[in-house]
Length: 412
Image (cartoon, rainbow, N blue to C red):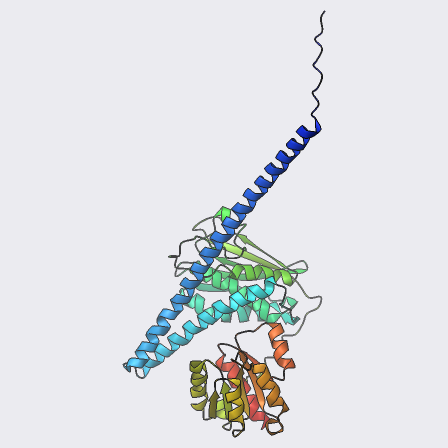
């Protein structure tokens, strides 16, 4: 029997090995570059879609606001019609402010700048506040909202404001993606050491391929800008991150398109029952107290003049200034009890103006409120350290402004 001997394995020389190694490295780099390119393409596509959606969502409330301005300017609306126009404008401005707040909140949460202020609170109090926050969206869709709450209080140790925000976002999401006349059910129960909250709807449902993505930033169920639901695709991202900051979890379920969806939030219960926090007594409005001398400082003349008009209509004596030196010039002859001071002034910042005010013996005891578009905790800390008594984020909430005015009146 003849055996064929195998040929000896050919050995590659150093140069051939170096060429093979370089080729392998180039192939690896090419594969990584292709993967990175696809990732960047997807990110760029989502960024473009988000910017287009943002413009779309901001233009929606701007249209009725502009129409309302024209109605009032033409003088054709009096009495009930004028009231309807003003109510509509206020509602739409609130919607715009909510969009901006969501953008700021998701940025703060993503960068770790949100600090939870936990307190003992029963789940029912959080649910009631979330329902009240979302009532307008639910009623606008003509939906039926059912609550199924257990008799026990289900005590939590949470940041009440942030958890209300998370549950309200789930209710708003259900209202947005449910056809008019639909049904939304919010239920809660104890499951061992956890409280489980479910928000179920009879809405458009979620395709199976979207279920893992609904909590991603800018995710949308459907991509057409003509969809009627709207939104920026960040509400559910906020829900997930806020719930997880509380040590909980959230998941989405749906039988499929047209068959509704259910969002389940699981939160750890507090070790012992906690009493419901006392409801703070609302401060009175400025109109009910004595008139104040108020200085409004803002380089945006429309903003300064409109706030001055609002305060004058409530009986206060108001002066305006549009930069730092102008404000100090006014204060040389005017002694207000309250100063509303924009921080981003040209030439001399609001911080510098505040420093000079606090150094002035003639202005001792004046209430100083910052007006700014920046509302993060770091910004509030900085204004406190600069001597401000209050921090108003633009656009200033009328109720918060009333409380500041009432506080200035109480200081005498």
